[in-house]
Each structure stands twice: as C-alpha cells, then as structure tokens.
Image (tube, rainbow, N blue to C red; front, side, top):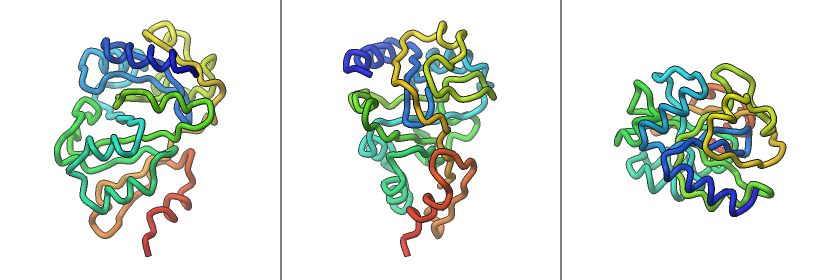
Length: 205
C-alpha cells in the first residue's frame, strides 16, 4: 500500500469508477455513494440484487459523525465507542442520507469505519465516503488476498490496491437502529469482533 496507490483510488472514485481495495477485514469494492452509475456497476460486478442494501465506509469517525448530524445522541456515543474497527453498524437514518446504499429501507444505513494501522495506514488519506461491499461474487467466499478475488471482478474494476494478506473474517454486523430506546441492539452477524466485546463496549453502567 502506497500513497500513490491511494491517489489512484481517490481519482478512480472521483471519475465514477469502481475500485478494489483492502480494509481491516477482507478485500472490498468501493464506489462513489452518490453516483447511480458507479453503484450499479459495483452491484453488477458482484452479481448482487439491486434491492439489497450495502454499507457506506468512512475513513475516520469524525467524518462519519459529520455526515450523519441527525443521529440520536446515544447512538452517536455508541458509534464513537465501537469504531473504528471490524464492525458494520446499522444506524437510524432519519435524514435519508446515502439513499443508494439503503435499498428499500432509506431510514436505515449501514456504516463502516475501518481500523487502518500498519500497512493499511496510507488509506487514511482516502477522501471517502465510499459505498463499499466485499469483493466477492454475491454469496461467495470473502477474499483474504488480492489473488483470492474472482478474476471477473478484478478484470471489471478500474483500480486495485494491494494491501497484502488480510485477516479474512468479515465485519460483525450490529443493529443500532433502536439503541436510543434504552440501549437496545442486536448482533446480526458475528465476525471480526466478538459479540462479548461489542456488549462490553456498549455497556455504560
């Protein structure tokens, strides 16, 4: 991972392209979340049904909070405790931000902020936010290495970044849409972060 690679990543997305990149969990695909054409291409590359929601990735917690000013205060606090890290948070989205990521439920948004350390640190210069999804065919195995990505996907993207071998476990998905109502949450998929750790971070007693 180099600064020049991140510049290519930024330029690719600014031009409406689709990029293949490493996160703190598995390899992913990224597109401008405000570009219908780019998002449609990303979905087509994956073979993902267009009605299925995906996540928006920010490259800092501050950027995520700034983009979602209408989050309830308890939910903002939970986001700050949980991120950055290997989690996808489903958040209430009363402002209906990033509708292309939301599928048929615009009042709910998936959010990622990866932990970018070591060889991934140059990605902190990514301009983001990006609409992102794992770099696999829909329902297929996640990619730990660039070489593990389906050749049809690699041939279809406009830029790719090599981050070496990644942990290979997808993010844990946590539903915080009702967190402001008494701290309610639900683990929808346990992955890179254990459920017990999520519970510990959300327990403010």
